[in-house]
Length: 295
Image 1 (spheres, rainbow, N blue to C red):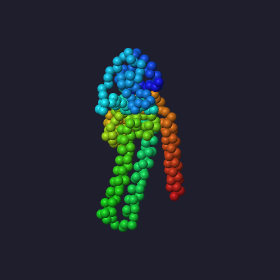
Image 2: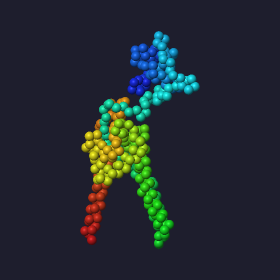
Image 3: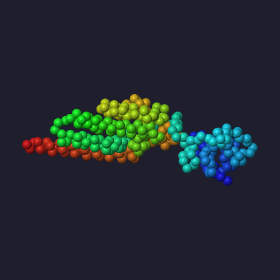
Image 4: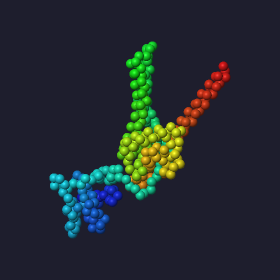
């Protein structure tokens, strides 16, 4: 006899179980007639009432499911067969504990994202800046056409990297993961104030709000270390929160308030690079000072 799977109240897949056990759960009232079930050979999940004839439930009368177009009883189900997780994509579970992303965890994510968008921006910007030099090479006097070319290329050299960064942050924050690559790496995500996914347009607004956070001597970013829900200035402006990747899901128990291995490694690497940079700068200043004293 076939084994069965069913969806519990939390939209989690349960099974496999035998038909007799599935029937017992129904008789005990643990499953309802509209509970979604699946067995091998079925194209999609179906309500229990539509397969009652296959189960030892003869003493009960299942309600007749409403027929769809074409005479088939088809359920528009978000559930995949057992090979995939049984979970509504984008479902928001409220009422559980929410772990907000700490300041240093957010810093680690920004470092990863900064490296990614920095490389992408340089790929676009450096060739444009080099072309500006080539436009002026060999010309003693600028012409209107040459001047116009300079202006267009110069604008493109600074606007295109900005658009690349905006698209990166807005698209990833509005995606199903609700997180950039850096945030995915450290295990955090961006949500709206109700715990749901933000739109692309809100992601765009949030990106430009981060520019304001950085212009104010980065005080806007530092606010995340002191506010009650660890919100930066751009979070307040965009109406967003940065939380653990498992917040507002059916598994809030998987949230972790600690920094995490990836974030810790990133911060240590940044600290080492910062110390090396400071040491190199001090050494360079010393060499220049000694050279000036010799003259």
